[in-house]
Length: 440
Image (cartoon, rainbow, N blue to C red):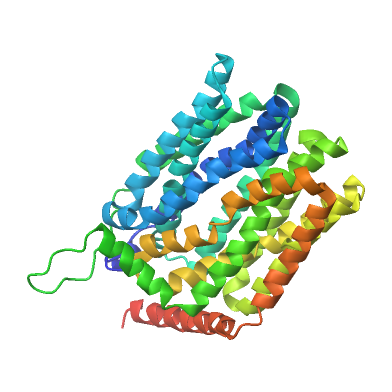
């Protein structure tokens, strides 16, 4: 960090934690709205079109701009600061999300217009999510919170949203239809914008200082900043291995959540309430996993934690839906999957921020996230076409097998040993910082 935060010792602890609390609050409300929309929007498409293929196309049109725009926003976030990017993009997302129910009520919402609006939502969400992620380490340092704990709290916030959002979305859709859920999503984006714009303390989320340029040299421009992020990432075998594995699992998760689960709910007769129940149970269990990770992950061997989490979070949920098991068994498996998933993001987030220089957080995080998310737009599209041609159960079985093989085979690579060494170096650095900060 280039900014002096040594004066934090003079600030009461409740004020030191305010920046982290503000960022987490903004994440919570915007992610809750997104999770509500993840039930309301697919159900809206299914009941208005009846087509799994069109459902996959809607998912593609939202996530493709999300991934592409996010990839190219990193230098901008580093240049102008994540705070300004966050509140402005959340406001744009709110406007586009509000237009969907409004235009449908006016009977002027055609399917191409719907695709354009969800594309706009995705294009705005990508930079907004990135900006909030980038503010977490700065807010953690100001609050003197260990980075692994801060990323654990961030993950727990996401998991809480994944608990409350689906429950609220499923209930809204079951009782009032999908349009109120889409309207609530717009309101959540607007509230997140207000929190970032007004509630964060002054000085949080501004642009990071670049290393001084040689005498007479021009400050780096956009494309040079972008290239520096790409060059750095290319020289990090551990981060590249993580990104490739997570990219494949994200594709499978996107297929599962955006197409396979809604189609299963409709074909089985369980309806949107079942989607909300399953997602909420999974999210609640993930909150527990994230809480444990926030408290203890920095003391555990990261490789063991990560691959155990993937083993629980991945294949079982595909296989239980394919088996035709009763609802209680489905809910139990989703709870186990959620608990395992709760450990993943705290570990991955800590590794990323420990290995990347402060002034490059935006561009490297943007590139890494975008590469890891590059399969998400294709997940729903591929699943929609596959279900239309071969049926739901074969696609679920193939997805579960692919998830298991991806996480287990990738884990055999030697780069993963660096993950535990990073943890040990981080612990030593934290102890050194603590020692140096004590008065002589």
